[in-house]
Amino acid sequence: MAQWDPIGIFDSGIGGLSIAREIRTLLPSEHIVYVADTDHGPYGDRSDQYILQRCVAITDFLVSQNVKSIVVACNTATTACIATLRERYNLPFIGVEPGIMPGILNTKSGVVGVLATSKTLITPSFAALASRVAGNIKIEIMPCPDLVFQVEALKLDYSEAAQVVKKYVLPLIEKGADTLVLGCTHYGYLAHVIAQVAGPNVTLINTQSAVAKEVVRRLENGQLLGAPDQRGKAQFYSNGHLGVFQRQVDQLWGEASQVRPF
Image 1 (spheres, rainbow, N blue to C red):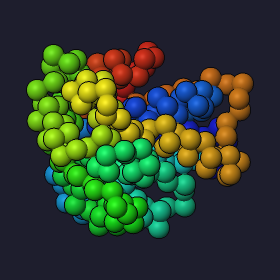
Image 2 (tube, helix red, strand yellow):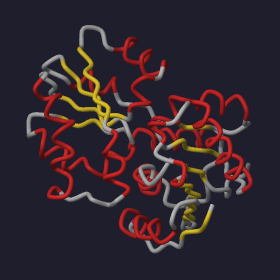
Image 3 (cartoon, helix red, strand yellow):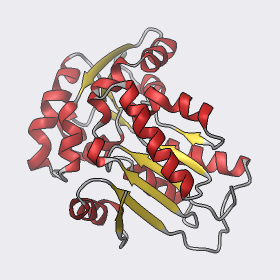
């Protein structure tokens, strides 16, 4: 590993681009290699073994690109297999977990709603996290299988997404939730719709900023930060339809970039 090596980031699709953008904001001089495992996603309905196989394959690819750290920009993959990845590879791995603790600290009603994939919500690590920090706060969970597809299709406007969002958000509001945790990196792209549906008295908790800050901390501790006078480059890979992925990157990344097959 060297200071000029890139940061590797991967997700089952484009959700992790939200984290990549936060990293770009905090570390504009760092190079980024992003992999969207679109052909095998979403991970929310996959087995742990399947997710691990995919994560290992992607990690092997990122290692071949000489990355100096890897961000597992997917809640499901983090909860399912990041511990195994840390055992197998001599690299810093930064994962994503639902922001339950910030939600608990924010709530006034004593009810926190968690929007996530079905897989994330049934993992032992999620259950352990919730039980460890919940105390007297009630955690209401809501599997949201359709939201990932909504984001991947770039149907992000209120008129396109409101009906799908309402069927997940309104039951949590009816149960008294005044704080909603966005437990999937894809959901950040629908935060404006979720906020509008939930109303002004409900707070949304998203974790991409915290993940980006953790990347900065880990690179600083490892003396791996790149030269501040360079402009970082970003390279994007996908095993899905490249034309679709190019449109997604063009809309969500905000910089001209060419995508490549993975």
